[in-house]
Image (cartoon, helix red, strand yellow):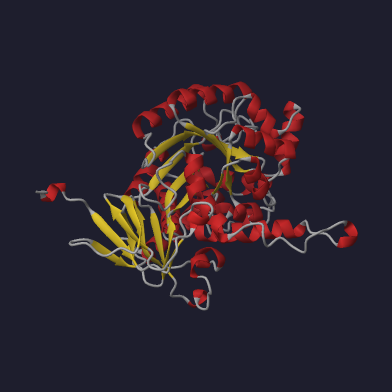
Length: 484
């Protein structure tokens, strides 16, 4: 006889209008007739199909809802959640924007404003149906008065999120003036590596559905460290069993710098110093030569596609079909909110769907110019975008136990209500969250089978109060930067 302590925890999501699983091909969309229903047992997906409730089983009614894998965001800068729409950087390209906004404000952050920024960014992501967040935090400097890494893990844990800390940092700056403020001064390599080891020992979990991960992530290979330091980082990370991440080829300036400083291309430079491989992923990869795409594919190096930030900064549109065809694992990241005023995964997925079609359409030529096609509407399907933002994210993070809806996988699920006029009249409800955009309300968000959001509400969260705190913090940061 089974005792109460031995009984399995079971939950049934019933009568969904559609499911997209994050898988490629025909498994990506189970047939609805009958079902589809989802049974979750002890935090894992147990069955998909026409399922009847069992005695004592909790049931979530998903009538007129669609179910996606919870999104996996593979590149963010959460501290920038208090820097949205900053006027001095609003109309600048990447390099001047860095000086105008994130670098200008970084010294103004203290423990309170950093924690608040992290909370705002994570709440924004959760409300879009995101279950896993990889944050590339580079707000570190010698003599730091607070532990930003611990704060990030604490805030993610409070919401029940899976969290991957990409520990950024630099041993050199783009300007080495002795008058640099403390918050812009570089770390020593020894201090950087020691902190990565500390964080890995304290937080890193190696399982396929880990709740916490640590990644070694110097801010950018071409500027943040010397080549030999990069090699040392790569070898140390692999000794520790953690992954590698950074920015690369976001704009043509990466190509200019690699050529001027090293006489090569950015991807080749990274390969020379052991920064390519299936345990590495780069954000952006907008400006690539064909041979660089080939190198990334041959080594299994992954990428975080950040279409809204790349569009906002005028950087361009990454060639995702070419990267995938070469064998590059593709994921989606929202990047920092200071270059993406809608740093959530629904907005990002919508942009990814549209921008790939736009990119291919821009390449269309008339028959007189040798053109063969009218446009590029076949460049990306909704199912592709869901796959990039779920299974693709799991692949680059090494979290094989999440990212798809299939028996045996962790039950990280977003159940979206389609009760807004934006979604009325759709012939195919499955595509609604990506194709129609907006923010569909959440019937439920589950992470590891635990209900994190229900009926579009997070427990104990006062959004009005959070908004008031954000307004106060923005005013405080501005006063610190402006000196009044």
